[in-house]
Amino acid sequence: MKFLSILAFTFSFATLQAQQILSLEDCIDYALKNNISLKQSALTIDLNKTSYLQSKLQLLPSVNLNSSFNKNQGRYINPLTNEFIEQVSSSINLSYSTNVTLFNGFKNLNQIKKAANELLKSKYDLESAKNELISTVALGYLQILFNEELYQIAGKQRDLTKIQETRIQILLDAGSVARGELLNIQSQIALEEQQLIQAENQLNMSKLQLAQLLEIQDYQNLKLVAENIEIPTFQITENIEYDYKLALSLQSTVKSSELAVNTALYDYKTAKANYLPTLSLTQRASSLYSDNVQDMFTFNEQIDNNLQSGLFLNLSIPLFNKWATRTSVAQSKIQIENSRLNSQQAKNQLRKNMEQAYADQIASYKKHQSAQKSVLAYKESFGYINNRYELGMVNSYEFNESKNRLIKAESDELQAKYDLIFKVKLYEFYTSLKFEL
Image (cartoon, rainbow, N blue to C red; front, side, top):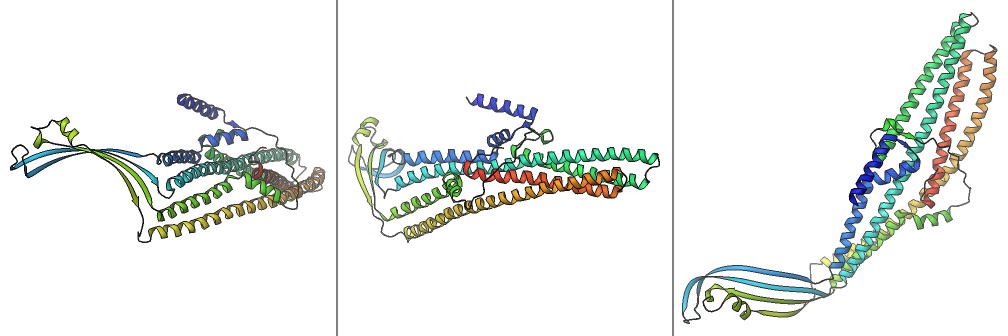
Protein backbone atom coordinates (compact mmCIF):
# COMPACT_ATOMS: atom_id res chain seq x y z
CA MET A 1 0.00 0.00 0.00
CA LYS A 2 2.82 2.42 0.83
CA PHE A 3 4.47 1.73 -2.53
CA LEU A 4 1.19 2.35 -4.34
CA SER A 5 0.71 5.65 -2.48
CA ILE A 6 4.20 6.82 -3.44
CA LEU A 7 3.60 5.75 -7.04
CA ALA A 8 0.27 7.60 -7.18
CA PHE A 9 1.83 10.75 -5.72
CA THR A 10 4.73 10.60 -8.19
CA PHE A 11 2.34 10.19 -11.11
CA SER A 12 0.10 13.04 -9.98
CA PHE A 13 3.12 15.31 -9.48
CA ALA A 14 4.52 14.43 -12.90
CA THR A 15 1.13 15.08 -14.48
CA LEU A 16 0.87 18.42 -12.72
CA GLN A 17 4.38 19.40 -13.78
CA ALA A 18 3.60 18.49 -17.38
CA GLN A 19 0.21 20.18 -17.68
CA GLN A 20 0.29 23.05 -15.20
CA ILE A 21 -3.37 23.85 -16.02
CA LEU A 22 -5.21 24.08 -12.74
CA SER A 23 -8.61 24.97 -11.41
CA LEU A 24 -9.09 26.46 -7.96
CA GLU A 25 -10.09 23.04 -6.65
CA ASP A 26 -6.92 21.52 -8.12
CA CYS A 27 -4.77 24.18 -6.48
CA ILE A 28 -6.40 23.69 -3.08
CA ASP A 29 -6.20 19.89 -3.23
CA TYR A 30 -2.57 19.97 -4.31
CA ALA A 31 -1.63 22.46 -1.60
CA LEU A 32 -3.35 20.39 1.09
CA LYS A 33 -1.46 17.28 0.00
CA ASN A 34 1.99 18.82 -0.35
CA ASN A 35 2.26 21.68 2.13
CA ILE A 36 5.13 20.94 4.53
CA SER A 37 3.55 22.73 7.49
CA LEU A 38 0.44 20.57 7.17
CA LYS A 39 2.60 17.45 7.06
CA GLN A 40 4.30 18.57 10.26
CA SER A 41 0.90 19.13 11.89
CA ALA A 42 -0.09 15.61 10.83
CA LEU A 43 3.06 14.27 12.49
CA THR A 44 2.08 16.10 15.66
CA ILE A 45 -1.18 14.15 15.59
CA ASP A 46 0.80 10.90 15.31
CA LEU A 47 2.95 11.93 18.28
CA ASN A 48 -0.14 12.67 20.35
CA LYS A 49 -1.58 9.29 19.40
CA THR A 50 1.48 7.55 20.85
CA SER A 51 1.26 9.74 23.97
CA TYR A 52 -2.39 8.81 24.39
CA LEU A 53 -1.58 5.10 24.08
CA GLN A 54 1.26 5.43 26.58
CA SER A 55 -1.00 7.20 29.08
CA LYS A 56 -3.37 4.23 29.01
CA LEU A 57 -0.52 1.73 29.35
CA GLN A 58 0.51 3.50 32.58
CA LEU A 59 -2.37 1.66 34.27
CA LEU A 60 -0.56 -1.65 33.79
CA PRO A 61 1.85 -3.01 36.42
CA SER A 62 5.59 -2.70 35.91
CA VAL A 63 7.71 -5.89 35.79
CA ASN A 64 11.50 -5.98 36.26
CA LEU A 65 14.20 -8.63 36.31
CA ASN A 66 17.50 -7.81 38.04
CA SER A 67 20.82 -9.59 38.47
CA SER A 68 24.16 -8.66 39.95
CA PHE A 69 27.57 -10.28 40.22
CA ASN A 70 29.71 -9.62 43.32
CA LYS A 71 33.31 -10.55 44.09
CA ASN A 72 34.32 -10.32 47.77
CA GLN A 73 37.49 -10.92 49.76
CA GLY A 74 37.51 -11.41 53.54
CA ARG A 75 36.97 -13.75 56.47
CA TYR A 76 33.99 -15.99 56.78
CA ILE A 77 33.08 -19.27 58.49
CA ASN A 78 33.69 -22.41 56.53
CA PRO A 79 30.44 -24.32 56.75
CA LEU A 80 32.34 -27.64 56.56
CA THR A 81 34.89 -27.09 59.37
CA ASN A 82 33.11 -24.27 61.23
CA GLU A 83 36.41 -22.37 61.26
CA PHE A 84 37.26 -18.82 60.11
CA ILE A 85 39.09 -18.71 56.86
CA GLU A 86 40.06 -15.91 54.49
CA GLN A 87 39.20 -16.42 50.88
CA VAL A 88 38.03 -14.65 47.71
CA SER A 89 34.41 -15.51 46.92
CA SER A 90 31.97 -14.69 44.13
CA SER A 91 28.20 -14.51 44.26
CA ILE A 92 25.30 -13.96 41.90
CA ASN A 93 22.08 -12.27 43.02
CA LEU A 94 18.88 -12.77 41.03
CA SER A 95 15.63 -10.93 41.69
CA TYR A 96 12.22 -10.30 40.18
CA SER A 97 9.75 -7.55 41.10
CA THR A 98 6.40 -6.24 39.94
CA ASN A 99 4.65 -3.09 41.08
CA VAL A 100 1.17 -1.77 40.51
CA THR A 101 -0.21 1.59 41.64
CA LEU A 102 -3.51 1.21 43.47
CA PHE A 103 -4.17 4.88 44.13
CA ASN A 104 -2.30 8.08 43.26
CA GLY A 105 -5.01 10.70 43.39
CA PHE A 106 -6.35 9.67 39.95
CA LYS A 107 -3.23 11.04 38.27
CA ASN A 108 -3.19 8.32 35.64
CA LEU A 109 -6.85 8.80 34.76
CA ASN A 110 -6.38 12.54 34.38
CA GLN A 111 -3.28 11.97 32.26
CA ILE A 112 -5.33 9.73 29.96
CA LYS A 113 -8.02 12.38 29.63
CA LYS A 114 -5.42 15.05 29.00
CA ALA A 115 -3.69 12.97 26.31
CA ALA A 116 -7.03 12.31 24.58
CA ASN A 117 -7.80 16.01 24.79
CA GLU A 118 -4.41 16.94 23.29
CA LEU A 119 -4.94 14.45 20.47
CA LEU A 120 -8.28 16.03 19.56
CA LYS A 121 -6.80 19.53 19.88
CA SER A 122 -3.98 18.68 17.44
CA LYS A 123 -6.60 17.55 14.92
CA TYR A 124 -8.40 20.89 15.20
CA ASP A 125 -5.06 22.69 14.87
CA LEU A 126 -4.48 20.83 11.62
CA GLU A 127 -7.92 21.87 10.38
CA SER A 128 -7.16 25.49 11.28
CA ALA A 129 -3.93 25.36 9.30
CA LYS A 130 -5.81 23.85 6.35
CA ASN A 131 -8.45 26.59 6.43
CA GLU A 132 -5.81 29.30 6.50
CA LEU A 133 -3.98 27.68 3.60
CA ILE A 134 -7.21 27.38 1.57
CA SER A 135 -7.99 31.09 1.91
CA THR A 136 -4.39 32.00 1.01
CA VAL A 137 -4.43 29.78 -2.08
CA ALA A 138 -7.81 31.17 -3.15
CA LEU A 139 -6.51 34.73 -2.85
CA GLY A 140 -3.43 33.85 -4.89
CA TYR A 141 -5.59 32.13 -7.51
CA LEU A 142 -7.87 35.16 -7.90
CA GLN A 143 -4.85 37.45 -8.04
CA ILE A 144 -3.54 35.54 -11.04
CA LEU A 145 -6.90 35.72 -12.81
CA PHE A 146 -7.02 39.46 -12.17
CA ASN A 147 -3.48 40.01 -13.43
CA GLU A 148 -4.15 37.88 -16.52
CA GLU A 149 -7.17 39.99 -17.45
CA LEU A 150 -5.22 43.16 -16.74
CA TYR A 151 -2.40 41.93 -18.96
CA GLN A 152 -4.81 41.09 -21.78
CA ILE A 153 -6.46 44.51 -21.55
CA ALA A 154 -3.08 46.22 -21.64
CA GLY A 155 -2.09 44.21 -24.70
CA LYS A 156 -5.30 45.03 -26.54
CA GLN A 157 -4.93 48.73 -25.77
CA ARG A 158 -1.35 48.71 -27.04
CA ASP A 159 -2.41 46.95 -30.25
CA LEU A 160 -5.23 49.45 -30.85
CA THR A 161 -2.83 52.34 -30.39
CA LYS A 162 -0.41 50.79 -32.87
CA ILE A 163 -3.23 50.63 -35.39
CA GLN A 164 -3.86 54.28 -34.67
CA GLU A 165 -0.17 55.00 -35.25
CA THR A 166 -0.37 53.39 -38.69
CA ARG A 167 -3.39 55.52 -39.55
CA ILE A 168 -1.64 58.73 -38.41
CA GLN A 169 1.47 57.80 -40.38
CA ILE A 170 -0.61 57.51 -43.54
CA LEU A 171 -2.24 60.87 -42.88
CA LEU A 172 1.16 62.42 -42.16
CA ASP A 173 2.58 61.11 -45.42
CA ALA A 174 -0.43 62.61 -47.21
CA GLY A 175 0.20 65.93 -45.47
CA SER A 176 -3.16 65.88 -43.69
CA VAL A 177 -1.81 66.08 -40.12
CA ALA A 178 1.15 67.62 -38.39
CA ARG A 179 4.12 65.53 -37.22
CA GLY A 180 3.21 66.35 -33.63
CA GLU A 181 0.19 64.08 -33.92
CA LEU A 182 2.41 61.12 -34.76
CA LEU A 183 4.76 61.95 -31.89
CA ASN A 184 1.82 62.05 -29.46
CA ILE A 185 0.66 58.63 -30.59
CA GLN A 186 4.17 57.23 -30.36
CA SER A 187 4.52 58.55 -26.80
CA GLN A 188 1.20 56.88 -26.00
CA ILE A 189 2.53 53.61 -27.38
CA ALA A 190 5.63 53.94 -25.20
CA LEU A 191 3.41 54.50 -22.15
CA GLU A 192 1.24 51.50 -22.97
CA GLU A 193 4.30 49.34 -23.60
CA GLN A 194 5.45 50.23 -20.11
CA GLN A 195 2.01 49.41 -18.69
CA LEU A 196 2.06 46.09 -20.52
CA ILE A 197 5.45 45.21 -19.05
CA GLN A 198 4.22 46.14 -15.56
CA ALA A 199 1.13 43.97 -16.03
CA GLU A 200 3.31 41.08 -17.19
CA ASN A 201 5.61 41.48 -14.19
CA GLN A 202 2.63 41.49 -11.82
CA LEU A 203 1.27 38.37 -13.50
CA ASN A 204 4.58 36.53 -13.18
CA MET A 205 4.94 37.57 -9.56
CA SER A 206 1.45 36.33 -8.70
CA LYS A 207 2.22 33.02 -10.43
CA LEU A 208 5.43 32.71 -8.45
CA GLN A 209 3.60 33.30 -5.16
CA LEU A 210 0.96 30.68 -5.93
CA ALA A 211 3.58 28.21 -7.18
CA GLN A 212 5.49 28.59 -3.92
CA LEU A 213 2.32 27.81 -1.97
CA LEU A 214 1.86 24.68 -4.08
CA GLU A 215 5.57 23.75 -3.90
CA ILE A 216 5.84 23.95 -7.71
CA GLN A 217 9.15 25.04 -9.23
CA ASP A 218 8.22 25.72 -12.87
CA TYR A 219 5.99 28.70 -12.17
CA GLN A 220 6.42 30.25 -15.62
CA ASN A 221 4.31 27.48 -17.16
CA LEU A 222 1.64 27.65 -14.50
CA LYS A 223 -1.74 28.12 -16.18
CA LEU A 224 -5.18 28.36 -14.64
CA VAL A 225 -8.48 27.22 -16.02
CA ALA A 226 -10.18 30.11 -17.80
CA GLU A 227 -13.24 30.26 -15.56
CA ASN A 228 -16.17 32.55 -16.18
CA ILE A 229 -16.52 33.86 -12.65
CA GLU A 230 -19.87 35.34 -11.83
CA ILE A 231 -19.97 38.25 -9.42
CA PRO A 232 -21.52 36.73 -6.28
CA THR A 233 -24.53 38.24 -4.57
CA PHE A 234 -24.97 38.75 -0.86
CA GLN A 235 -27.72 39.88 1.43
CA ILE A 236 -27.35 42.93 3.61
CA THR A 237 -28.45 42.16 7.18
CA GLU A 238 -28.68 44.27 10.30
CA ASN A 239 -26.26 42.05 12.23
CA ILE A 240 -24.25 38.90 11.78
CA GLU A 241 -25.22 37.19 15.03
CA TYR A 242 -26.71 34.12 13.34
CA ASP A 243 -23.66 33.69 11.08
CA TYR A 244 -21.35 34.23 14.05
CA LYS A 245 -23.02 31.48 16.10
CA LEU A 246 -22.80 29.15 13.13
CA ALA A 247 -19.12 29.95 12.70
CA LEU A 248 -18.50 29.30 16.40
CA SER A 249 -19.76 25.75 15.95
CA LEU A 250 -17.59 25.18 12.86
CA GLN A 251 -14.32 27.08 13.24
CA SER A 252 -11.55 24.78 14.46
CA THR A 253 -9.57 27.65 15.99
CA VAL A 254 -12.36 28.19 18.51
CA LYS A 255 -12.66 24.48 19.25
CA SER A 256 -8.90 24.21 19.74
CA SER A 257 -8.90 27.11 22.21
CA GLU A 258 -11.71 25.48 24.19
CA LEU A 259 -9.77 22.22 24.38
CA ALA A 260 -6.76 24.16 25.68
CA VAL A 261 -8.91 25.09 28.68
CA ASN A 262 -9.60 21.39 29.30
CA THR A 263 -5.88 20.65 29.18
CA ALA A 264 -5.26 23.27 31.85
CA LEU A 265 -8.02 21.77 34.01
CA TYR A 266 -6.47 18.30 33.79
CA ASP A 267 -3.08 19.74 34.75
CA TYR A 268 -4.74 21.36 37.77
CA LYS A 269 -6.28 18.06 38.87
CA THR A 270 -2.95 16.31 38.44
CA ALA A 271 -1.20 18.95 40.53
CA LYS A 272 -3.79 18.67 43.32
CA ALA A 273 -3.32 14.91 43.39
CA ASN A 274 0.15 15.44 44.88
CA TYR A 275 -1.56 16.43 48.15
CA LEU A 276 -3.03 12.91 48.44
CA PRO A 277 -1.33 9.69 49.63
CA THR A 278 -0.04 7.15 47.12
CA LEU A 279 -0.80 3.46 47.59
CA SER A 280 1.01 0.76 45.61
CA LEU A 281 1.42 -3.01 45.74
CA THR A 282 4.78 -4.69 45.14
CA GLN A 283 5.61 -8.36 44.78
CA ARG A 284 9.27 -9.33 44.89
CA ALA A 285 11.25 -12.59 44.68
CA SER A 286 15.02 -13.14 44.91
CA SER A 287 17.70 -15.83 45.28
CA LEU A 288 21.49 -16.11 45.71
CA TYR A 289 24.34 -18.27 44.49
CA SER A 290 27.85 -18.20 46.06
CA ASP A 291 30.91 -20.16 44.99
CA ASN A 292 32.24 -20.50 48.59
CA VAL A 293 29.75 -23.32 49.21
CA GLN A 294 29.77 -24.82 45.76
CA ASP A 295 31.40 -27.97 47.20
CA MET A 296 28.32 -28.53 49.33
CA PHE A 297 25.50 -27.31 47.10
CA THR A 298 25.04 -27.15 43.37
CA PHE A 299 23.86 -24.02 41.58
CA ASN A 300 20.25 -25.20 41.39
CA GLU A 301 20.26 -26.29 45.02
CA GLN A 302 21.52 -22.90 46.15
CA ILE A 303 18.90 -21.09 44.07
CA ASP A 304 16.17 -23.23 45.62
CA ASN A 305 17.53 -22.97 49.16
CA ASN A 306 18.03 -19.17 49.03
CA LEU A 307 14.75 -18.33 47.37
CA GLN A 308 12.88 -15.48 49.07
CA SER A 309 9.62 -13.78 48.13
CA GLY A 310 7.33 -11.18 49.59
CA LEU A 311 4.25 -9.07 49.00
CA PHE A 312 4.45 -5.42 50.09
CA LEU A 313 1.79 -2.77 50.41
CA ASN A 314 3.38 0.66 50.21
CA LEU A 315 1.70 3.82 51.49
CA SER A 316 3.35 7.19 50.91
CA ILE A 317 1.87 10.25 52.63
CA PRO A 318 3.24 13.62 51.50
CA LEU A 319 4.02 15.87 54.47
CA PHE A 320 6.38 18.53 53.18
CA ASN A 321 8.01 18.93 49.75
CA LYS A 322 9.26 22.53 49.92
CA TRP A 323 5.90 23.94 48.75
CA ALA A 324 6.38 22.31 45.36
CA THR A 325 2.81 20.99 45.24
CA ARG A 326 1.31 24.26 46.42
CA THR A 327 3.29 26.19 43.80
CA SER A 328 2.27 23.74 41.07
CA VAL A 329 -1.40 24.07 42.01
CA ALA A 330 -1.17 27.88 42.02
CA GLN A 331 0.50 27.89 38.61
CA SER A 332 -2.18 25.54 37.27
CA LYS A 333 -4.91 27.91 38.40
CA ILE A 334 -3.21 30.77 36.61
CA GLN A 335 -2.87 28.67 33.46
CA ILE A 336 -6.60 27.82 33.58
CA GLU A 337 -7.50 31.50 33.69
CA ASN A 338 -5.00 32.29 30.95
CA SER A 339 -6.37 29.55 28.67
CA ARG A 340 -9.91 30.79 29.29
CA LEU A 341 -8.87 34.29 28.28
CA ASN A 342 -7.18 32.87 25.17
CA SER A 343 -10.37 31.02 24.31
CA GLN A 344 -12.45 34.15 24.72
CA GLN A 345 -9.91 36.08 22.69
CA ALA A 346 -10.21 33.51 19.87
CA LYS A 347 -13.99 33.95 19.90
CA ASN A 348 -13.70 37.72 19.97
CA GLN A 349 -11.18 37.62 17.13
CA LEU A 350 -13.54 35.47 15.08
CA ARG A 351 -16.31 38.00 15.60
CA LYS A 352 -13.99 40.86 14.65
CA ASN A 353 -12.83 39.04 11.54
CA MET A 354 -16.39 38.33 10.47
CA GLU A 355 -17.50 41.89 11.17
CA GLN A 356 -14.55 43.16 9.16
CA ALA A 357 -15.24 40.69 6.34
CA TYR A 358 -18.91 41.69 6.27
CA ALA A 359 -18.03 45.39 6.20
CA ASP A 360 -15.47 44.68 3.46
CA GLN A 361 -18.21 43.03 1.41
CA ILE A 362 -20.37 46.13 1.54
CA ALA A 363 -17.45 48.46 0.84
CA SER A 364 -16.29 46.31 -2.08
CA TYR A 365 -19.81 46.14 -3.46
CA LYS A 366 -20.17 49.93 -3.37
CA LYS A 367 -16.71 50.35 -4.86
CA HIS A 368 -17.57 47.97 -7.70
CA GLN A 369 -20.86 49.75 -8.38
CA SER A 370 -19.04 53.06 -8.51
CA ALA A 371 -16.33 51.62 -10.76
CA GLN A 372 -18.94 50.28 -13.18
CA LYS A 373 -20.57 53.70 -13.40
CA SER A 374 -17.18 55.29 -14.02
CA VAL A 375 -16.46 52.86 -16.84
CA LEU A 376 -19.80 53.66 -18.49
CA ALA A 377 -19.20 57.37 -18.15
CA TYR A 378 -15.64 57.23 -19.49
CA LYS A 379 -16.71 54.96 -22.35
CA GLU A 380 -19.34 57.46 -23.38
CA SER A 381 -16.86 60.31 -23.04
CA PHE A 382 -14.22 58.44 -25.02
CA GLY A 383 -16.73 57.60 -27.74
CA TYR A 384 -17.57 61.27 -28.05
CA ILE A 385 -13.88 62.30 -28.13
CA ASN A 386 -13.08 59.52 -30.60
CA ASN A 387 -15.78 60.72 -33.02
CA ARG A 388 -14.49 64.29 -32.81
CA TYR A 389 -10.93 62.98 -33.24
CA GLU A 390 -11.94 61.15 -36.40
CA LEU A 391 -13.35 64.41 -37.70
CA GLY A 392 -10.17 66.25 -36.79
CA MET A 393 -11.93 68.43 -34.20
CA VAL A 394 -9.64 67.39 -31.31
CA ASN A 395 -5.96 66.66 -31.29
CA SER A 396 -4.22 63.43 -30.35
CA TYR A 397 -3.30 64.78 -26.90
CA GLU A 398 -6.95 65.14 -25.89
CA PHE A 399 -7.68 61.77 -27.48
CA ASN A 400 -4.95 60.04 -25.47
CA GLU A 401 -6.02 61.73 -22.25
CA SER A 402 -9.56 60.46 -22.68
CA LYS A 403 -8.31 57.00 -23.59
CA ASN A 404 -6.01 56.82 -20.55
CA ARG A 405 -8.86 57.79 -18.26
CA LEU A 406 -10.94 54.98 -19.74
CA ILE A 407 -8.10 52.48 -19.34
CA LYS A 408 -7.67 53.43 -15.68
CA ALA A 409 -11.42 53.19 -15.09
CA GLU A 410 -11.53 49.71 -16.64
CA SER A 411 -8.54 48.65 -14.54
CA ASP A 412 -10.18 49.96 -11.36
CA GLU A 413 -13.41 48.17 -12.24
CA LEU A 414 -11.57 44.92 -12.83
CA GLN A 415 -9.74 45.21 -9.52
CA ALA A 416 -12.98 46.06 -7.71
CA LYS A 417 -14.62 43.01 -9.30
CA TYR A 418 -12.04 40.53 -8.03
CA ASP A 419 -11.84 42.25 -4.67
CA LEU A 420 -15.61 41.86 -4.30
CA ILE A 421 -15.45 38.20 -5.31
CA PHE A 422 -12.79 37.41 -2.71
CA LYS A 423 -14.47 39.39 0.09
CA VAL A 424 -17.83 37.69 -0.45
CA LYS A 425 -16.30 34.22 -0.69
CA LEU A 426 -14.14 34.82 2.36
CA TYR A 427 -17.18 35.71 4.44
CA GLU A 428 -19.00 32.62 3.18
CA PHE A 429 -15.95 30.54 4.11
CA TYR A 430 -16.45 31.37 7.80
CA THR A 431 -19.82 29.58 7.84
CA SER A 432 -19.34 26.92 5.16
CA LEU A 433 -15.61 26.07 5.28
CA LYS A 434 -15.75 25.87 1.47
CA PHE A 435 -14.18 28.21 -1.05
CA GLU A 436 -15.90 27.74 -4.40
CA LEU A 437 -16.05 30.16 -7.31
